[in-house]
Image (tube, rainbow, N blue to C red; front, side, top):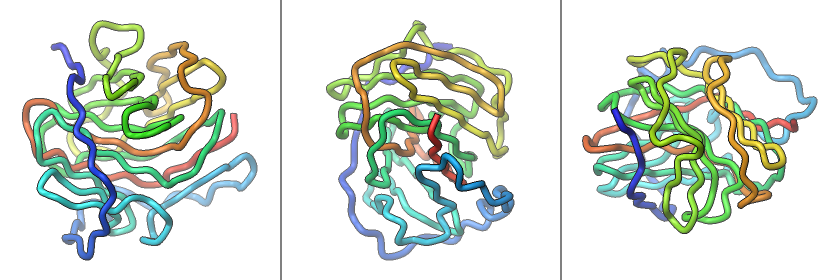
Length: 220
């Protein structure tokens, strides 16, 4: 099964006045032990809606806080939506918990590092049907690094299970792990620093809904 990104449709931030109840997210994400402050550059458990992330809604989809998690819903095929907290770092180790709330398992979701603008950044993506890859997005075009297609990853949990995504952007090295299992490492020097973020998207079938929690950015 070949899984490649060929088109990205980006949404500009708008403020969302309301959000539907999503009790499943509260059930999926259990409280985590408090992280030590040593080495932490940024963290968010999304319990405060004013913590700085994009809040957007349109017919394309939405990105917003709800039930102490951050939700990305994508209602168009072959489309990605993403959100940023508006910070800037060079070398980072990023972790987040992510779960599919609803929609097709043929999806993609993950984290962003060294975000320059809506057309230039690195992203580590996994899918609910068990694939993963590290991408460079340059001038709006996705390039899967080191492979012809996203690679199968047995460590990815399907259904609505929570997956821990770990993405290291250190020097020219980009390293992805899922649920504490190494997945891939690539080298690139296109972007040296930038914002971090979250991303979710569709392939042929729309309706992807991903929830994220416990987003942490650490020093390497």
